[in-house]
Image 1 (tube, rainbow, N blue to C red):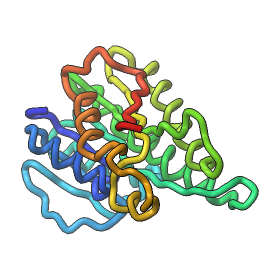
Image 2 (image 1 turned 120 degrees about the vertical axis):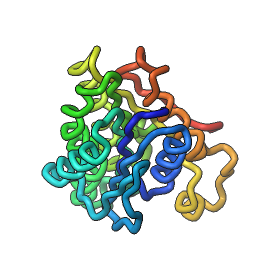
Image 3 (image 1 turned 90 degrees about the vertical axis):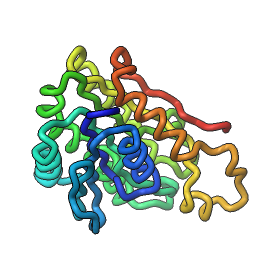
Length: 226
């Protein structure tokens, strides 16, 4: 990752923080974007943009363009921004479906669309999305989330086909990520079987590296030991 410029959306979250920090340790310069406010001052190695609603195309474009301008280039976009809800179709609310679409599909779509002109100028443009194992076969209560993540899968494939030979576009499909929030919601689970943020970050950053130049349009399960 040495010398590359990477933009991470959802950069303040449990996974986003690990991806951004690992990329920086490996020599990348990192732009972080999140809906929450940022307290970090800009440096040569890192800049952060808080309060950004990536479901708004204009806001996404402004943040991506500012990150690229700050560093003078953009080599990889890692779309981590998203959300989760668990409710059955019968007892749920149509607003949950709309919210999941906005948080998971539109954020990735808007950030990718904004990044494409910059990535085309790179010698090795990369987009990595976060899909979900649960979107391959949805269980009870997983409808809104799984449908939105299935949309991320199809977005990944379409973008890969549209930019083959110029930008690689792939998605990782985690099972349950070992975060404090997930442990709190599933206290009886065997956490040792879950995929850790660092394990997932390692796969994501491989896909962002030069070593993954021949991989595009892939939906890669990263399921830990489940």
